[in-house]
Image 1 (cartoon, rainbow, N blue to C red):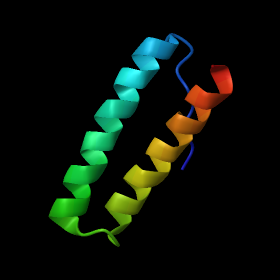
Image 2 (image 1 turned 180 degrees about the vertical axis):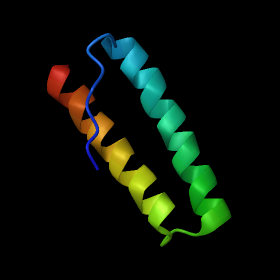
Image 3 (image 1 turned 90 degrees about the vertical axis):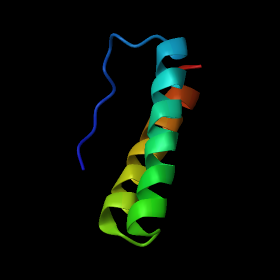
Image 4 (image 1 turned 135 degrees about the vertical axis):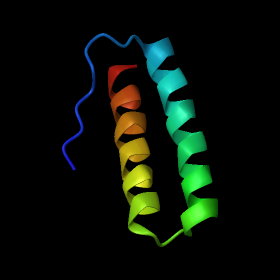
Length: 57
C-alpha cells in the first residue's frame, strides 16, 4: 500500500480526514468483519495518517 500525504492538507484538515477514515474503518469492520482484508487495509491507512499527523504536529 503506497499512500502519500497530500501536501495541501493543514493539520485541521488532516484531523477531519482521520475522522473520516476512522468512521470508514468502523463501517468496514462491522460490514465485512474485523479480519477481512478491506478492514485491515483501512486500518493500516488510518494508522499511516495518524502517524503523519503526529509527525507534523
